[in-house]
Length: 507
Image (tube, rainbow, N blue to C red; front, top):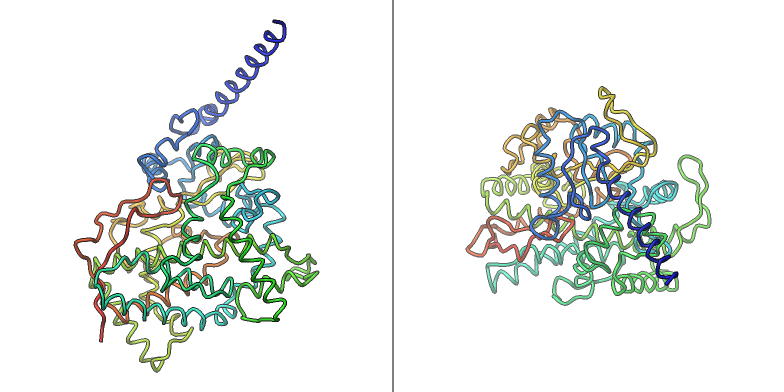
């Protein structure tokens, strides 16, 4: 009886502690006089996520609600985590660039001990991130892109051959599926040096695991929300985000690739070669004079994984959405094709690295696609010390405070981009771009923590789209979705079902 009474008291005490914490947490912004929406006790302001809305729509609705408030930031609960939701572009610039030293961390979950594949450059914080960023920065220079360029073109030529064969059988194709196979083969070749054969084999292993890695997690939404809200606690509890079969597949592929290359002394001048070189250098001297150790196998695994997933998903989605818009807007498609033909004449019909750099209008098409269909909806940051917003002394981002820069919402702000749901590549002409703040366009982030692989992603998309537009005419058909229906369970901008377009070979 006495033991029961003690256990009852412990339970009551724990309940009181949890209740107090929840109340304190959920009134965080109210106590500080910051505008916010009343959160769900567990899901915060993400109550509709995975049910009726994707995260892009949730963040956009929140942004639009407070767009006229004139507050530099408002409150937002990313599940249980109270975050400063940035509304002002000047403040965004402080966070991403001017005061980067105070906002260099993201504060999101990774677990290098129990889930080494999660400890990649996108997630890491502090000295680990700085060290790895310095180590890897040299792998994405223009010179290294030129090395990889012929490999990407080789895959792209095979891509065009496969599409010609498919169009001869059926003019209506799922373009989203086809561009995904193209990017899987490109990344598989450049990151792992492996001929994935996804273009011809619909059941290719790399394609299958590339798709599964984005949707199959070890836990459901609530546990993932807990990991997002309390990353340090989740790490101490040994929680793991990556599904076991996903981790095992990439670990096997990376281990086998490294072993074969080192044993056979194979060199391909690709991303994997660069990672192996860093592993075998016991010490490296960085540009700032700092001496660091080489990469471990776990670090190679994590970087190869994120390079594959990021390059595969973002590029394939961008290419698919671009072709969808070109099919709906034939005048834009015709203008892009005319530019490609003109630039090819200037380069004596040679498809070179310099050729793709001269495709100014096509680049505007890609930039507008990245604005309109922002794959990653927001940027995460965390304040290392308190930050008083310039000109707003009552608005303080406290030490340890999470920060959300809602890039997708900013990209659809009519005061920045008039008629934001209209697809208009001319928005990214030099004249129009010069009239907007640089942080008004954030598909790759900005500042020292921008996307390290943006050059590769842009090169891959330019090559693929240029060859597709040159060889085929795209149009809508009865199977083309309009409007697009997005998957509410996805953290990236992903549609439900296929993206069917009608293709007609040119010449």
